[in-house]
Amino acid sequence: MKYKILLVGCGWRSQIYRRAVANLSNEFEFCGILMHSEQRAEEITKETGIRATGSFDTALSWQPDFAILCISRAATKEWLVRFMEHQIPVLCETPPANTVAELNEIWKENVRLNGKVQVAEQYFLQPYYHAVQTVIDSGILGEILSVNMSAIHGYHAMSIFRKFLGIGFENCTITGNRYEFPVTKTRNRAGWHESGEVITARRDRADMVFENGKVAFFDFDGEHYFSPIRSRRWNVQGVRGEIQNDVICYMNEKNKPVTEKMYREDDGINNIDGWSHMYISFKGERIYENPFPGLRINDDEIAVTDLLVGMKKYLETGEDIYSLRDGLQDAYLDLMREEAVISGKVIRTTDQSWT
Image (tube, rainbow, N blue to C red):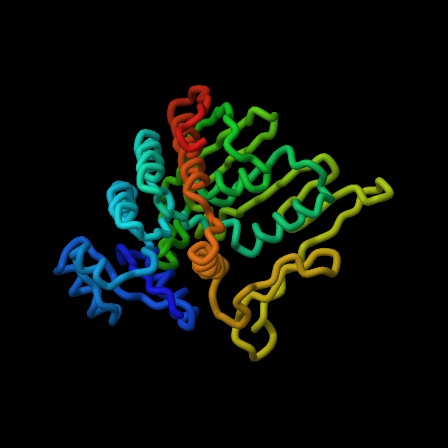
């Protein structure tokens, strides 16, 4: 049986799902694409070869097993509720709303309508973050007390902070600031730039102190995702050790300090095989193995493809791949972080309807 997917929206993010479905063509297929107008739907059909419509009723007649929402934050709440009303499961791209009030409204409607919503938070499924989580879960670092991350933005960072620190829905106190610095333009989604143009990059820094004393240190520059002159950094500290990028320092069973590294192995380097990620190892053991070996896809595409596999399991067993509650909490914490860095004030989070 192939699961029939209704893709809602067809922007940049949807391209990754189209490639993921193509790679899992034995398990999934698109029954169609839902757009905001018939004119745009006709254009999308010509571009993709997938039937498209501007009519919600027509899209429902295709009997999708679930929908993937790849639309703007402003439109997400309305479409989530529409699918909830028809009891159609949804994989919703992040974040699900623009304001705290909207986040609570979504949860209220989810409870009222018994919605079946999963959030497309993928970073914990990327090879590096999955490997780090495996090391944390092994216990060699002891209890994790702080995470300092300068790599990913907003709600994605909140997800990883909560995963690594073992934080559920605890409240926190947030302080922070926003800075602007000149930097030479190098690369963005459109490609490389060699003009030497200097642009202004925004950098946010925030300290998030949770009720249990654990701390997340957030540091993100708008150029981090693409620029080769703005490095990405990770530090995870526990009672008995820490991870600094790919180096792990910890106390062994004899209480002596040991330093080891995580090693990443990719195929297609210095051989004639096609490039693909293979695994990450630590102490001679594979702590992460690519679930899609041989596919020429990057780390984010590995994670998104894994999300689809998780969505299939959710449909079959009810086991969450990433729950709406967690997605709402990530978005809420990020809205509060944003308020802290913009205002310069101390912000304290409070319990919300989903907590």
